[in-house]
Image 1 (cartoon, rainbow, N blue to C red):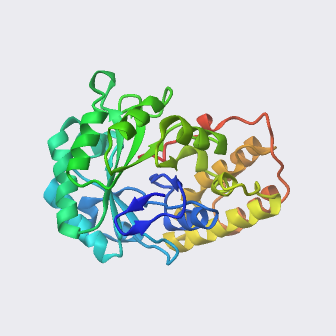
Image 2 (tube, rainbow, N blue to C red):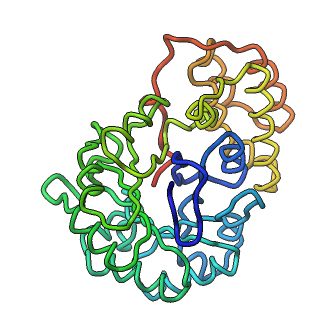
Length: 335
């Protein structure tokens, strides 16, 4: 069982925080289908300080999200602590610090995986947030900046000493991005070195079998699923022994997700454009997916989305020869 301060999670399989993916609608669906927890997508500490409307939208959450787990990013301990207090005011019950995002616009400000290059500052961020909020603080890291600087054990030990309650470990370096294979031995080493801090594995979990194998091979306390859950929130149900979705259920879920996404976004054209990537991911592994994706990128209205979804997903069957999860476009699912 994973414990985060006073909170006990109901399972060991979590949705990874992904930009443009881990919004409230998808989190709610994943939780309903068995995810033990779903941290928010990465939220800018500076955005929280400015209290802009977009950032506030990221913090909308449903009653089912307990504990409400908010991931923030930034590089300055004092700013991160003040932002975390604001997130607490929005209802956050756990604060996660992004120390893994490899995107240049994040790292150039000293945030994301750039924190791995300054271990004392990374630890101070965790300590400052914990002292300011009195909430459980977690972090998500990579194995290091590059192959020559894989300092994951040093980082893990410093964060635990600073009060980190749980550490999610993505065992690729910042230089690797999402290429190459995730080195699960890194997760094993962090788990062996950890004291009371919970260790959550992440990386190359494409199927329920992968998730179970990660638990067995690394000894980690939980598994965080990223790419494997894109367009496939039913993976969490299958991890608990449940069935794959029927075409009817898939269709209904895609429409539920779209309608909730449109309500969250507030304007038709932006919501349709932003949801196209989800349509492509939901179509993965189904007969006729390529033709549907070609159609999806041209959809402009909510009525067109609804008609296309009902026409395709209500009868779409699985295609064993379809491309794997590695072929997904990760342009909008970083972190």
